[in-house]
Image (cartoon, each protein chain N blue to C red):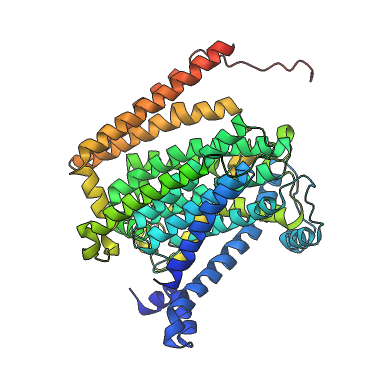
Length: 166
Length: 394
C-alpha cells in the first residue's frame, strides 16, 4: 500500500460518503463525481489507462451531467429538511453488509488473487481492443444494438410528449 | 540531419535535462516533469495574452475600426493593462450564491484546460506525457470543462447563468459526439491512441509532399468536421450561444468579476488552443514540416506556426459569421455532423482495404461528397430562404 493509493482511496471514500451525507442534492452529485474521479485515478495507478480514462469520460462526463440534469428538471432547488437517515436504515445496512460479505468471499476464494501479475502498461489498450474485436465481438454488437434501440426509444418518447402538449 | 540543425531542434529538451541535471539523481525525473509543466503554463498563458490582442485587432480590422491602440506600440501591451485591471477589480460574489462551488468552478475549468496539454507533442521529443491512450486522455479531461461550466452556472443563482450553462452543456455534449467520431478515422489509420505515434506516422515524405492525414479524402473531411465540432466545443462564434450577450447577457459567467472572470476567459482560450493543437496533431502532421526541404526549421516552430494559423482562422470566422439559433445548432449537430462523421469512418475503412492508387482516391471522394451533397439538399427541403423583413427596425 503506497502513499498514492492511500490518498486516492481516501478521496474516493470521502467523495462517496459526502454524496450520501450532504443535504443539497447538487452538492451530492458533485461529491459523487469526486468519488468517480478518485476511482478513475485508482485505475490509472494500477496501470489500466483505458479503463481509468473511460471511467472519467463516462462517469464524470456523462453520468454526473445526466444526474445533474435529472435533479434540476425534477426537483425544486430547496434543501431537504428531513433526516439523512431513512426509516429503514437498519435493513439497508444489513443488506449492504451481506452483499459485501458475499463479494468479499467470492474474491477472496477465487484463484485470481493468488496469481496477480502487474499488468504490462504497453499492453493495456491493445489487448482490450483485440478482445472486443475478436473474441467478444458478438456481445459487443448486441450491446451496440441494445443501446441504439434505447436511443431510438428515447427519441420516440420525446417526440410523443411534444405532440401531446402541442 | 546536420548536427547544428539537430541542436536547434532539441535546444529546449537539452536545456530541460541540463537544468534537471544540477539536482540529485533522485529528484531528476520529477524536476523534468515540473520544468515541462512550467514551460507549458508560461508559453500558453503568453499565447493567450498575444491572442487576445490579435483577436481584438483582427476583429477591429474586419469590422472597419482600429481596435486597441493606446497601450505600448500599436496597442500590443493591452493584455498587461487588462491583467492589472482584472487583478485590482473587486471580486463580487452574489449573496445567494453557493460560495464554495462558485469559487471552485473557474479553478476546475483552468485546471481541466491545462491538463489537456499534457499529451500534445509541441515538438520532436517535446511532450509531457506520452500516454498510450493519449487521445482518450484529451477527451476525458475535456469532459471536466462541462462540469466546471455547470458548477459556474448553477452556483451563481442567476436565471441567465443557469440558462447559459444549460445551453453550453447541451451544445458541448452534442458536439462531443462528432468531435470524437471525426478523430476516430485517424486512430483507425494510425492504429494507436498515442499522440506521439500518430505524429510519427505523418513525418515521412513522398517527394516533397508530406504524409499528413489531411491530404487523404477521409482526412480532409475529418479535419473539416473536427474543426466545426471544435468551434462548437470551445463555444466560439458562430456557436457562441452559451454567451449570447444580446439574449442571456454573458451566460454562465455573468456573476463573475475581476480575476475569476479572467480565469474563465483564460480557460476558454486555452480550450481553443488545445483543440486546435489536437487537430494539428491528428491531421496536420503535428510538428512535421509541410515540405521535405523545410525540415531544417525546428519542429516546435512548425507546431506554433500551425497553431497561430488555426487561431487566425478562428478569429476570421468569428468576425465573419453570425450566431446560430439553438434549433439550428442542434439540427446541424445531429442531422449533418453525426451522419457525415459516421460515413467518414466508413470511408476510412474502405481506404484501408483498397489497393493504393487513383481509384482509391476517387471511390473515397465519391463516398464522402455524394452523401454531403444529398444531406445538405435534404436538410434544405421545406425551408424557405428569402430576404428577411424586420417589422420594427425599418
